[in-house]
Image 1 (cartoon, one colour):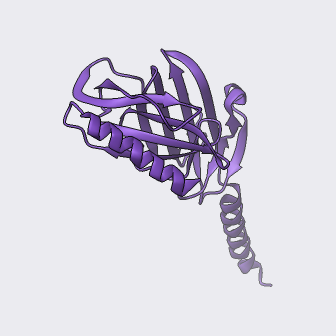
Image 2 (tube, helix red, strand yellow):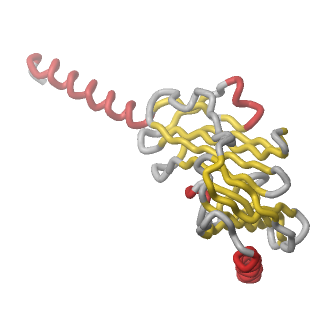
Length: 217
């Protein structure tokens, strides 16, 4: 090989090696679940993936009842989502999922939406039951961005895990087979409200829930 061609060949090899190394290495993401997230353990994600982080909180009368957090490498289909709901028996639920593509971009603390004190003029039937699909809803005054009347059916395996109604953000509507809380598979739907739902609309929501439960279980 002529001496003049050696630098060019060496440069080509270096460039190709760098490209291959970069495509394999990707970037670092925090990889943790609930109680390990405080130490920020890391893993390498491919450049075709995203770093993701999500957190969910279920509270009763302001007290934390259930909490779960996870961070790691997500597929390229990672979709951000923020939602909140105020349900019967003073239950509130907040959820946030975010995606990013940069070095350790999911390292920061994630804050789920909190309940706003200001009424928005909407009232929805509300109840919460972990034992049966039957309940006695009461009218709940909605606040903040929770402008939809929500019904939730949760399944744990073939069994009913939770049935709930209340106020929610529009992003909480029409979830199908979404796993939240302790890996409960949730199905949700929403109805519009003119501010003062009648007994007929409450009954309709329960009947719709019964129909969905029959189909899903």
